[in-house]
Image (tube, rainbow, N blue to C red; front, side, top):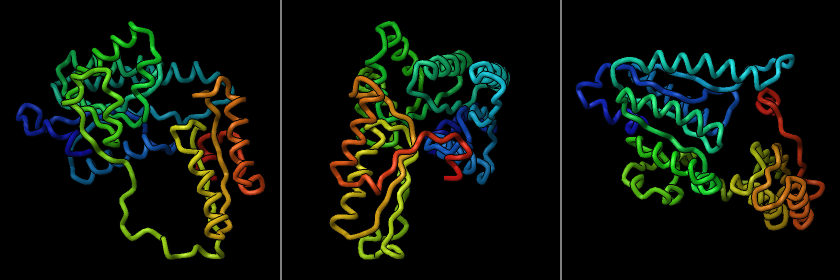
Length: 281
């Protein structure tokens, strides 16, 4: 990732100019925030100058409606970004989203960076950007295509995800693959039994088929039936209607899958946890 972000630094005009990083830092912990933190830490370790615009949502003010709080946060962050970016051209690294609100934010950040002739590196951590694009009205599809064309590099976490940008053929030459899977520093534990024969799994994500909750449930069943391990799982998240018509149907489908695997006493569905409770769990 660092090579992609700093690939333009060989340009003498960009040398010694702080990179601009726009994204969320932990907490809360997520794939996006952890990857962003990895990049920040590596830049610090190598002494590469940079400025960060951190839009992580970690404050909790119960007496203020969240929407007003976030509007205030985004106003401050927007002004900070405008001040930082209104300098000589450098590289702007930005983590883009897979939502309409996120697309609006991305549009402002990318368009302003392009206007000031910054080099633009976009990082896509989501797994169905193509599906998100197809679900938008035509005018928004057109805007998204034009917006992504402004990027110099688009980072995706897997080779199989390149196809989600097939809606704009001009993007293919801009895509770089940087996997976000954990590296295997030692052989898999295929021949080792966990202490007391117990495997405890916790799933912390949205209950969306693309997140793999079905595979987690099936894995618990395999561990118990075929390997005689005391596997259990706690699923912590929010239901989303994807292929199902309603979130209630999505819940019923998950419960049915748990019953089919005979895991009623071993797999529990818990409500979505907020930032600190999720970290504690």
